[in-house]
Image (cartoon, rainbow, N blue to C red; front, top):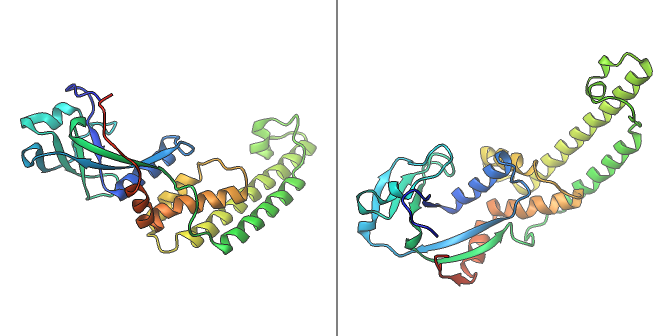
Length: 246
């Protein structure tokens, strides 16, 4: 871990800020299928190393140069978070203040709160998808523009096939939206609407192999919101590492 003035500081925040950061990256930065990790950090600092609480000092890319942190001899800059877990206090630190690190892969491997209603919704969604695909016409030789806008097709037969294919596309989208709402109601009923919307937006970008896989993935990721105590307890018992500076 480098400590040149132009190197970026390490940002640390609350559990909520970490999860919201993950969801934002999944939704906005093409990280829906990336592997994420949750770190529990302890610091070794004196009071003189820490700034008072300030406004956020990151640049357009969310980075803070270590020279900004080290101004006036500090090594930890405290700031009010404007993005994830708004209003909470986050830290920008130089690497040498990090004493220990504990890490777990998130989401956790096994969903501890499976839902029977969601499992039934997955079965129904799979059956509906199979029926839609069985009715889908062969669109070989039909251009993309004609598929998306059937009215542009000059040949009546092509237009009819394009209309039928688009109807299947629309039915597939509606079926997925209904399935997604069923999972949302099953797993996130007690979560505030803005956070639910952020969560669903992030998960809808994720690839999945089947309706059952989507249900299990949704359940596992939802536990980051619905069972934070379990997640924090898991990371608290993870192996403790001491940074080496490499």
